Image (cartoon, rainbow, N blue to C red):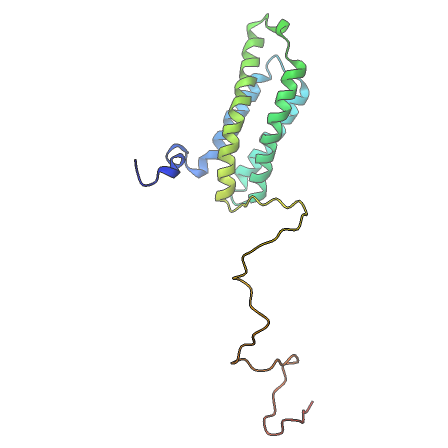
Length: 177
C-alpha cells in the first residue's frame, strides 16, 4: 500500500471547485424526476429550497456559512424524505410506470444524500469550518501551555505606566503633569 493509505478518499473525490455544483446538479435532476408523479408539495418545497441554498454555496465560494447551511439542509431533508415515504408511499400506487420511475428516483435521491453530506462536509472543512458544538456546559481543559503564570514577574520589564507619561529619572518621588 502507499504511504497515504489514510487519505484514499482524495483520489476518489472530484476537484473541490466541482463538488458542490455536481451535488446540486445530481440532486436537482433526481428531485425533478421524483416530482413527476408521486410526492407531495412539501417534498418539492423542502428539496428545492435546500438546492437553492446549494446554489448560494456555489455562488459564494469562500462562504463557510453557505456550505454549513447546505449541509444542514441536506441532512434535514434525509429525515423529511423518510417521513414523506412513510406517509405518502403506498403499494397500490404502483399501477403506472411513471409512478414507479418517480418513486425510484426519490429513493435513489435519498440513498445518495448521505454520500453528498460526506462531500459537502469535506468542502466545509476545506473552506475553514470547524465542527465545534457548545451546548452551554462548562468544560475543563488541561492544556495550560498557552497561559502565562501571574506568580512570576518578568525581571526585564519596567513598571506599568498606564497614562503613557514620560518618566522623570532625576527626581524619583515627584511627578509632573
